[in-house]
Length: 233
Length: 185
Image (cartoon, rainbow over all chains, first blue to last red; front, side, top):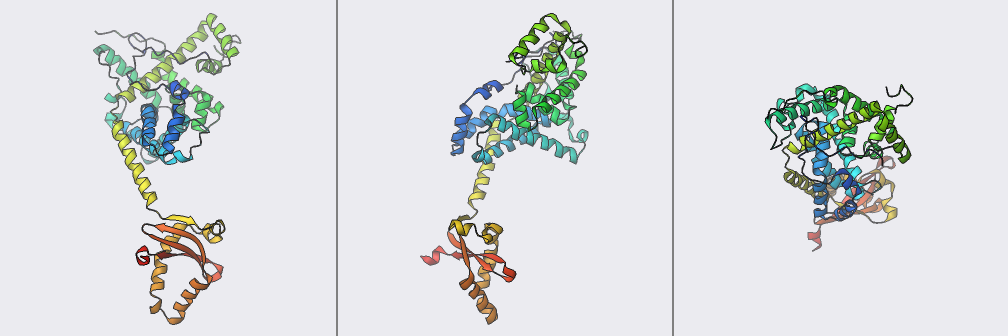
């Protein structure tokens, strides 16, 4: 493959001009999830009524799909609804799942459809700015990474950086956001993303290009490493 | 820059390289170019940096959201259970034969519609003694002589059969005849 293996897993520490270390609990990485044949067996068992198998699928993917859903719908409670509804749908339609695509892409298709539908319905009801409570808007404490050993200076920098990234993501149309999240967070190939979003591969490339360009425009300062940040510790 | 100078990698190729979507040969060529082209390498670095930032921010945000997945799974189980219960409480409609099941009446009228009409039909039959004698006899005659048995139905402790009853203009309506198990005993 493909030169570009996933970018380094090294932490991004804004002070050192790198992303801070993620504190995401260990779950199967996207690659591990895709490479695993475990899903097939779990799906078959779940189809036969084995609830433990269904629970295992839920536990394997819940955090990953939540992260992506949250990136699309923005509000934690909405993301929770999306994930919950997605797994209810999975359970309901598991019997008709033929395995033509992987469980992984099938699950993400359900999640993304629900997420994007959710955003569109919300937009029809209220203006976005009126709909986001202050506590969940950019700057919300939930958007600030909790790094127990971080010093105050780093926390401020991380908070600022995280807010900027979230704001940049939030300005993208949902279909651009979906593509960039599936690529950057889930590490999906263009083909997988095309399958999940049910659009041609060329469209995925185009959306990804435009989404990145918009993000780069907004995060230019951070991307160029021009931050003049003093570690206050 | 890129795209303007023929020797530079196009933005599209840089993106595909970054995403691991180039063929092995294309990727090898790109790597070779990047070794000596600082502007292209800088663009690639920016793409990588953006990927890191998006992934970091998204993962951290999710990790710091207060999500109780145990509770969520319990909710899912509850919803699934309710759905199963709703389905199991619906009558189990069993075609008596392929031919009968494929009858126009069956195709045209969902079995659930038959159930909705069942009560009305039974009431009508039970009240036949109160109807004018011509009307009551007509109903019974229809049921007796012209019915077409199309399905068997089970709902709860009762079972029954669905009949297509001809009405005006060549139309049929489904009627459920309920066999009360208590009575059989």
